Length: 127
Image 1 (spheres, one colour):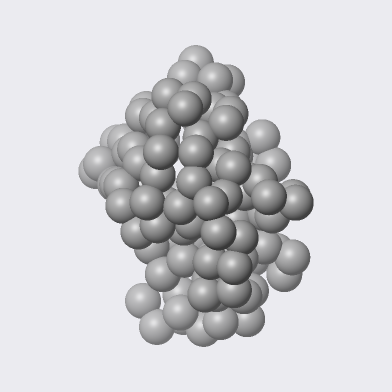
Image 2: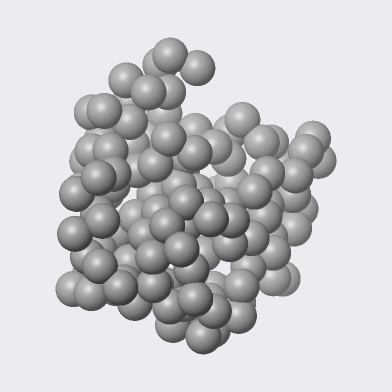
């Protein structure tokens, strides 16, 4: 299971890459492998306000539909439109081409509450 050490993670299997006040958000390699073949990704529009812990979209696979939860509060400033036509990128490159949204964070200190790579690995080993 690929768990890049430079990212932060949630218990719900989202990852966060921080770039200044922006947070790039996607789902983890573990999440995509548990879901199976991704067939549809529903994401919010640019300008949507997100609250930490609230649902911001969903991922549909051949097996199930899974909600996506915001790791941080803020405003969506970019959406990965490529996933609309190529949702399979979530399976192929969950940390690279398949980032889902970019959020301008209201409070960057919220990132400190997220899991680091080692804690996330421990979390998934319990599942």
